[in-house]
Amino acid sequence: MARVQADAIRELLARAFPDAVELDVLDRTGGGDHFLVTLSTPEFDGISLIDQHRRVNDALAQPLADGRIHELRIRTKGTA
Figure 1 (cartoon, rainbow, N blue to C red):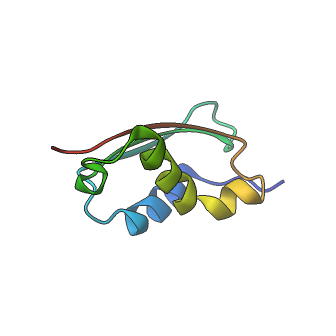
Figure 2: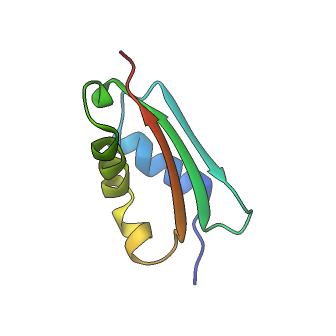
């Protein structure tokens, strides 16, 4: 199974959330399939945490669906 680089995930998220004020992607194990995403954007203001996480999952749908991302931990917040 091909692995995905943290930079590739960061790029997908940057395109999906162009107004992000914080965006970090950490390869938790160094193996290219376990990641921690930290994202803060005004787009999340007033949106429930579960909906914030759904939007991140939607942005990463392809690498999640094809198995390149095995585990994804998500930390999100708005800016308000």
